[in-house]
Image 1 (spheres, helix red, strand yellow):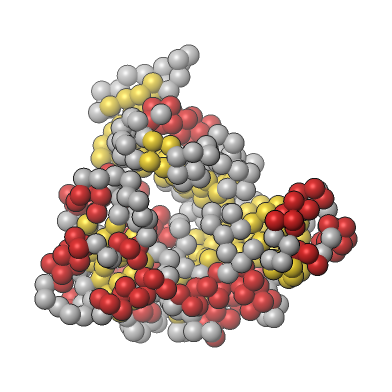
Image 2: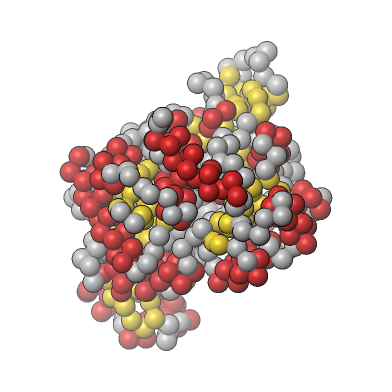
Length: 476
């Protein structure tokens, strides 16, 4: 019996009497183990092709938008989702009279914990208090910096206490101002001239900020899970950022490539694992259990800098879980469940981290709404497996011409919603339903591939950009 099967058997034994409900706005957040877990259900807000595929294949999913027939709900909150009478009915129906239930969510909040308490369930996430402690910019730094974590040079203080000249002298010409909490980058400002700083200073003179040296280099991110007997690390990936046609800003992340490893030699990999392990040990010492992620930058001088801690399930975990399963590795998402369900974990953390941080031939690339206003999807493009062909192909169930000057065609091959459905020559394209309203900076479409998506300079391949450009034109 493989390690995957061994731990799945034990998890499913626990779930046999106590169903697990993953609550999220988007069903994609809950993916990874959905076809392997018994008595597991997804409760989501969004109607989508992902919902339809899972409903047809497994039947273990509920979408409030699909049930009501109304897209674009006013609220987008996993906590408020639990207030819906329709959601309550689904949970009661699938619980089959059992009073003990588990809830899991993407990012824990106090409001979610309160709802879960009202339901009388156990939550398989770390607490919102610990999430805030390690995700808020100020407490994250003050808690971890005392343990010699490789943060850039940093100052904590009120903006009114520091002139641009003083900060420039201490931190360099370019620095980063971070307020305690923001959303999709709104709490982070890059400063490289005095007028920008004075403008920010005038708006928030008494606001305490974390002000750090701006670090030039390549951005990577890595996933991890804190267990009782170790810190399990995997999925080192290159962050694709600031691609003009698909990103709303220079710093916006628009994808992950799990194969690109510029500046990551054996020694650097060892250093990354050491830093993430140290971070995990501090978090564990404070009572944190489960998934988290770390953003880092490697400079051209081969200096490693820790930029951010995401004290929750990293966004790439659903995709990475499928990659780990394909490669016979125990997924971090499964280790998360093992730890919360009190199952003995016999996996050697050091060996696990060494193996699971090796490159994968895979990547994903997002098309975001780069406008300032919401984007309404006007054309329906089905989620599924596609390939690019140079001429008419009788295997195409549907096709879209990509270029007026060539015969290049975006060809729809078959239904699918994860990389498990990809043929060797194809890629997965995930889209939004017609009529869906997508806010600024949010995702319009996504490519997932079992091949690398960037060249040796870290730039997305032209075919991927052309595909997303074609998608945007079609749905506009």
